[in-house]
Image 1: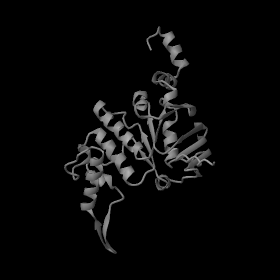
Image 2: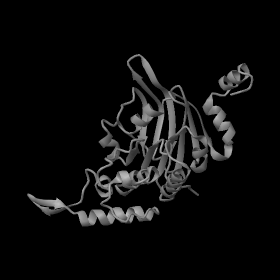
Image 3: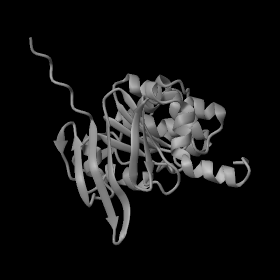
Image 4: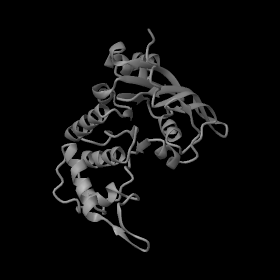
Length: 264
């Protein structure tokens, strides 16, 4: 009896190294994310998270190492190459224009067109309907898709950016600190939507330094420190406190705590 071959991860990087001149930003990072999985990428400031994000999204080319998408080696030259491969990145600034409408931000650069030849125009009726329907799917009722996106809450704007990526065919979502500047209710909204995205079969790489947020939705956790992978752990294999301790420096934090009399 033969068994079915294991499905290749949506994204896999092996021993990725990135140099900027004499500065080593990444020094042998490995991770993978599969369909229907949330991989949380954890690390303190300076751990290499931003460089890794930009490498995965096609902004930087790695100095060495392997980068595979669905089992095939790739070498992205631009973010457009990554988008074409189904990798969408939602950065902290969301790449939105606050004074433009929700619809215009949702379809920015990909507006539906009617007509032919020189007689073409944007099909705003379709664009507004799609925007309203896609936001309604995730529980956000926008009365008027003409309203400026800047009038939405921070959590709602995050959901617009994520919904936009899903609608345009992303297979992997890379989320850069999506909850860092949000309140409790808005954070809950974003975490619930991440769970919905996973249920649709997408792979999610959730970058954060907040262990509680990661533990709420994550299936696996990869910890970075000074450009290196400290390890990858299944949720069932590591407690939240252990994860926090590993991310925060472990022995170094304990030494400082003892030096300050246990106040850290």
